Length: 245
Image (tube, rainbow, N blue to C red):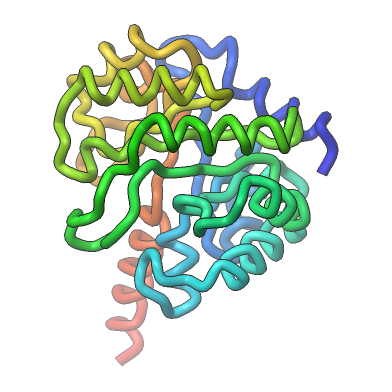
């Protein structure tokens, strides 16, 4: 993957007007990726939970080699840039992680700052300084070749502390992260996060929550969906299935 492609992906995150966030749908296989590309989205962001479900695994249980193979198939199957959610990096040293991402053909990655259960929120936040060191190592190895989206898991791990969240976000930006993703942050915290973070802010769109446009108006510069599109697709398929009987 060329730095020019990564640079083009990075540029999509900047200069955006309020209410016009970068919308990055999450494909789980090549077929869904091609549908989203045909719909005109300029880039895609694979969700680890969506890929896990498509491969028959629980979220967080996909063997790393299968995850990298899945995102590589998606990246090869479309012509738009693809960023990959690779959870916490699977314990890989920065050099090996970057090599695997670049070999897969992606232009960016999500790296989260917690580990443990994905289903009952009983996981543990990593020490922020150690996570920042890891992000700095990834940045040093990748240079401009990868867009690094640093996920902050305070809210998803039950630490609803805005000051702690902002402290982590700032550390990660200082370490070289291109964007900060405070997953499941309450919508009323988005303006403060926007004001307190020097760089793009990723928010997740959830069912019955604010629309992507509304999230943008609250401060998000990038909106992703996690496994939400897969779940909506499966719900539609259940309805179709009911009609077949």
